[in-house]
Length: 446
Image 1 (cartoon, rainbow, N blue to C red):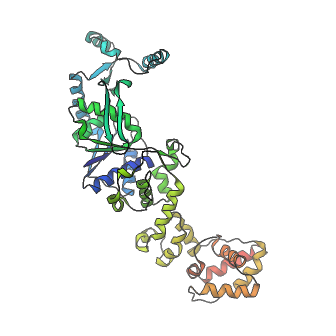
Image 2 (cartoon, rainbow, N blue to C red):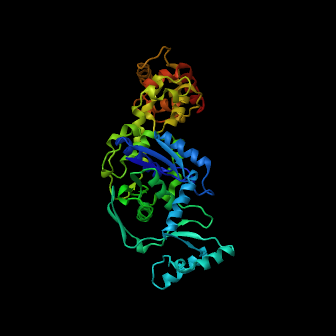
Image 3 (cartoon, rainbow, N blue to C red):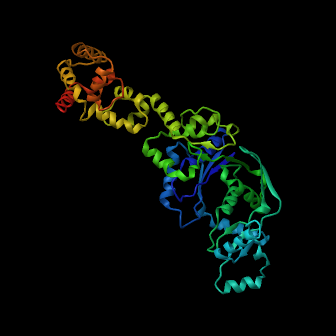
């Protein structure tokens, strides 16, 4: 097996891209095959080096590597040679219509009740007419002459699929400026790099029908490549995710603190009946199976992703995170706070609680409680029994218990109403900080 992930470096990766990349990688690793990263960068105006670099960085962050790498911009000679073969066989023909003329033709066909496809008028142009037009400064674009009938294949996810070629316009493969389109270059690359399986989004189904026709025209065997199309993702409400890509870009998820193991586990299970399990692709590849993917659109729910993120964080041991913790934070701190993290970046806030100078706030009615708590604060050393002994003493003196006792103390010590168990957190904060915060909270309300 040999698969490829072929993004265009015209922007940053989003979760739809990541899902395709991880699926291909896992299939290749499970089968002992090869994974090719190909940058489809023939659109020189929109493709940027910074996007190409970001794609590689984001894939590595996801835990993916690649056995081969190529850029389409390095293969222009190969595309030109393939184009010449199609021209010689009569399957690639020049057209001179402008965008305005093509738009007018489409409008006329619609008015006539005909499908708005190209009428192949250029095929009736003589060589003399073409030469004269080129001599007058016109530059042709080149269309591929689709064969008749339908193209059929057994899709690895969607089952039997058929594309009726007679209902489509002959696709443009070469623009008037001489640049090649993805529809063409992808076929040339898949043939010449020995791709055996193409796994991509369902929005490429029609492309697959066209590309199989091009592949056959180039001498390839349409049965030599297996195709599988993953149903598109929707948002949690079932709407098109494409309209909200800014909220689910990989860079933004990384900045927000989503763990790659949570995202990988979520994307691999998405669209199947399998319960998602957080884990890096290398750990999940052996169980990934396209046959488990539903033919229906899959809903990408950020809440489910965050739940998986929490599950992953709560199970991490100290060795896995020690290099990511703030300077000075040890295993006791990590074990105390990990169960309260939704995102890893929240670790900074809890480190401020333990080792920083937070300024607490409390309700006016709690000032007397806080003063008494400060008076009864035991001397160090402290351990996990200190919290219980201290609060029992304060409770007996004030008559408070339960939430009325614990919540004002928690707010004063941490600035939060919820958080790690204070019997574990209290010794980490230390007597000096605890006393200062109690006094600050009490004074702030007198």
